[in-house]
Image (cartoon, rainbow, N blue to C red; front, side):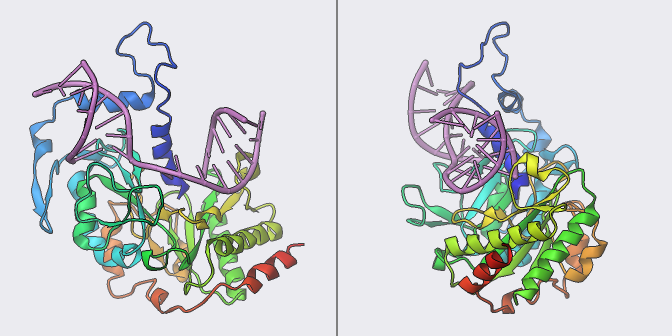
Length: 350
DNA sequence: GGCGCAG
DNA sequence: CTGCGCCAACGCATC
DNA sequence: GATGCG
C-alpha cells in the first residue's frame, strides 16, 4: 500500500509558497509538482482527447486522454476495466470507507488523495456523516455505477478500511503488507509470504494472498468483527515481530530505511483505525498500472512479481477465474481474534 | 474533474 | 472569463 | 522538536 503514497507525497511536497526564490525566470515553477501541474493546464486539449461516451448511464469525458504514457493507457480503458471488474471488486469495496487517489491530469500530473466528500461532489458515492468527527463525511462506493463514476472523476487507485461502516470500531480483517527492499529477488517474498501463512495457520487463522500491484504482496486474514482497532493492531504487530524474530536476516517489522536493507518489511501499521490498503482488483497509480490480484496459495510459487498483472493483462486473468475464484472461500471463513493469540505470540517472542 | 473564489 | 487552490493525516523512525 | 517516510 505504501506504493500509492508516493503520489500524494508529491502533492505535499508542494511547499510553503515563497520559500524558494523566484529570481531569474518568472515562470520557474516552485517545485516539480507545480511544473507538471502547469503544463497540461495551459495546453489546449486536442480534439480527439475530448471524445465522450456513456457507460452504465455515466457520462465519460476525455475518453481518449492518455493517463499513463508508460503503457499508453487511455482513460476509457480504465473506466471500462472498473466496469468489467465491478462484480469482483464490489464485495471488497461495498460499505467500507474508501480513500481515493485521483489523477485528473494523468500519472505525470499532480495527484491527490481524497477520503472525504469535497466541494466538487463525487456523483453516485455514498456519504457517511459522523464516522470521522470534525471532518466532512467519509465515502463508500457501493454500486457498479458509483465505481464507474469514480473512474470518470479520475480515481485510479482505491484504498479501503479494514472495517465496514456498519461496525466501524471492530475490524473485519487484519492485513499484512509485505514490502521488500527493491534489491531483493521475488523468491524471498514468496518464502516470507508462506512463512506468514504458516504462522497464521498455527494460530488457526485462515489467510488469503494477493499481489499488491506494486512491489510486494498482501496477506489478508478475514475476521468476524470482535476485537477493536487497538487489539487488531497489537495482534498484527505481534505476528510481524514474531516473524522478524524467527527470520531476522530476512524480515523486519520496523519501519525505517536502516532496518529494511536487504529485508522484507512486514507493515502491520495498516491495521490502525483510519488506515487503508489498496483494494483487491484495484489499479495502482504508478507507471505500468499494476493491478492488485487475489491468487490461490497454490499459485504463489509461480508468480513473478507484485505487478505481475497490469491493466494491459488483467482481462485474461478475470476470464480465467470466472468460474474459479481464488478467494471463493473468503466469505465463508468464520474466525475471531482473541487476546490469547496476541499474548501467546508476545510470550513466545521473549 | 470540478467547485468556489479572487482578480 | 481566467487562474488558482483545494481535494488525508498519522505512527513511527531518525537526527 | 522538527522532518521524512510509508
